[in-house]
Amino acid sequence: MKSTLYWLCALLIPLITHAMSVLPQTPAEQMATADATGTAELVISQGRLKDGSIQTRFLFRTVEAIRGDFPAYFEVFAPGGIYNGSAKADSRLPSLATENTYLLHLQINDEQLGFYNGPAGISPVESVDLDAFRTIGSGLGAGADLAPFEAAAMSVQFSVTGSGLLDSSGFRRFNSPDRDEPIPVYADTSTLPSGITELQALTALSNALAAWEANSSILFNYSGTQTFAQSAEDYSSSDGLVIRVQFHDSFDRISDASTTLGFGGAGYWLDSGNGGSIDGSPFNPINFGYIVLNHSKTSLSNALTLEEVLTHEIGHVIGLAHSSETSNESDEALSEAIMYYQAHSDSRGASLNSYDITTALKAYPLNTPPFSYDRVLYAVSTPSGTLTNPQVNQVTIVGFDLQGNPLTLQLDSVTENNGSFSHSDSTITYTPNGDFGDITVTDPASAYYDRFRGRLSDGTNLSPFIDIRVVGFRSDSQPSNNYDGIPDSWMTSYYGNSNGSSATADTDADGLSNLEEFLLGTDPTDSDSNFKITQFSTNSLEWTTQQFDLYTIESSPNLSTWSVERIVTQAHNATTLSITDLPTPSSGSAIFYRVKRSQ
Image 1 (cartoon, rainbow, N blue to C red):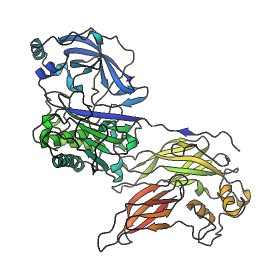
Image 2 (cartoon, rainbow, N blue to C red):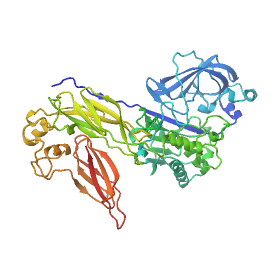
Image 3 (cartoon, one colour):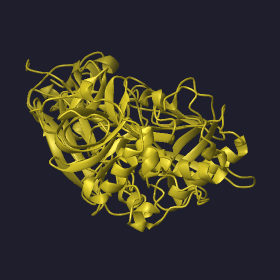
Image 4 (cartoon, one colour):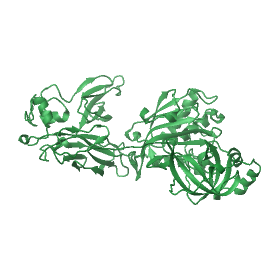
């Protein structure tokens, strides 16, 4: 027996990303509110970990102090960045290039220096009238002394890039709409902006969601109101794939409350490609989203401004960046976008322009990526290395595409420490390289002995990665049965010994051979034990299952045309599955259901 088995575990890194919208300010208002203003050249930047959260340290060389006392070199920190292989994307993290000079509005927060209003406090010097700022500064107070933030140069470079999509650590998107599954949205209306009724708040939210749905393939499902026990930002993926919209900041999460109307963001996995690939661009999968509004701002007492801000923040939640963070942006397409960093407050409500729509379609195209489901294999090993019935070590990748495009499978990677994979079209065959006896990994949910990883292509887009994981082995050691693929332990369980019957026998005369009974997970000695629906009501059904198998529930109004209702995978060591929320027929009509098992 081979004794070199080991298992591997894949680790995904959860990340958080969020962005904010701010009130417009004049240059004079910016300078008066900020602690210091000056021009400086970015020397270098680097990610670090502080209090368990990733942030980026920027080192600047002072060019000119306009308001405040600047040391020759000083450091500024912003949330987000990359550190030690992990990443946190945050639109408060500016997109800056080394050796470029910027006009900076700075603010002292928690004993460190930050950018006032995030990227809104930064402008390339060539885009501003420095004389005007000098004039404004001469009429204001002295400003802060930045000597405590003096710094020396750093040795490691880190740069952040920007685009229409939030991409500082990889593009991200919800991929459940590719499966025609809307994202649940919950609203906390326990506190509202002054003068706004709950009906107005929920109408604004509905219109904001509908604006993105109407112009991309994103799907939402408003699921009701809840009173959140904490800030919406503090929930995690363990609480489910949902978006939480909090119409208040009762938990004081907005630091720049004087100008910030709200922020929105999402948690996602740093697993590029597992959110699908769109026209060559791989995406990370988002697994929850949140919005927090500053209910104290009088601007949000206007229902249409509230609607505009919600639409803007939903854009951040689904993966869009600001169209521009330049004050007085000259490009009208950028300045008039719902994703412009300043609220317009001009009664536009949930109105997207061409820039917003084009950017949304980069992440949520109308030609959605295909999708499939991970599979798990409990392989049969044998001393001969060859099985008479190799189908016991086969699985079929079942692929779907909402547009009905033909799909092809591409191999991305394999781990073959204990056997080898081969594939023909969508059928994957695994051949162990020895007899391993009966053994399983400790955690079938994440660990494996070997793994096949591939994606489905519709010719333009790719599905998320599809994993075929070998999580255990059962031995067929019987040459007298020509190594027919029936494990010794299975044969002994039903027939008393490993040679008690054969793969072709039908002991209970139910029309299924032992091989078929083994694959279906049924009892070969009981004619009443077969693959069947065991319970059915108006909106639920239950059926017998085999561990790790994939089942497709289809419906039909006429037994002629069938459509997919649900696709589910059986868990480890379970014998039945049930669905309890199937559609019910309207009065005077009927719906028929059937369950299909995938090899």
